[in-house]
Length: 195
Image 1 (tube, helix red, strand yellow):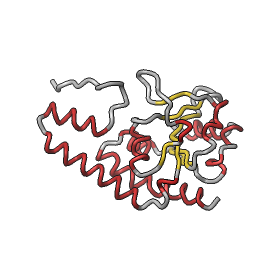
Image 2: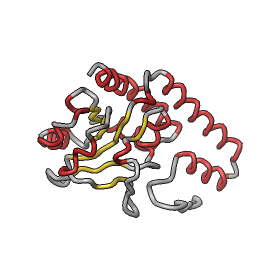
Image 3: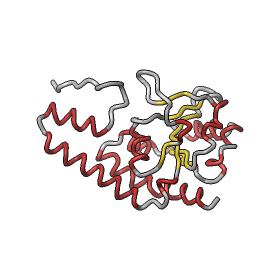
């Protein structure tokens, strides 16, 4: 059968670069691993350079609309969704940058009652399993008061192919995902800049 590789420190929070290294070591393909990591870094840098004022843009990647009206979570550092945006040059919102996920998780629950933690985010990204789930989050009064939502800095993802591509952070998924995601990100950033 195939070799099985355990996660190095916490499930779901193994960076794509770490995954490439682990797989390369098992398959004895270290030179190919370095090439893949270089290609991934170059891809992210090239896309990041196309963003104006990326380093002045704060973001949070969130999840709501499930688990009832009080549900609101924030993805943490080392989750590929978050790390991809950081590598594009954006800054993880300081108010949530030190949050930790519980063991076995990749998001920290803050609850809708703490939505104001997201007030300073220029861009909010979220994903949904369905339009019904999206509507459930967007119906929440506290969510609607967030500046990023009011100012056009909110990116709701419902295309499951794009959701998955941006979740994995692998060279192949990021290459495909960024082609779809970058126009959405640029639109959200330009909306923020105009306010």
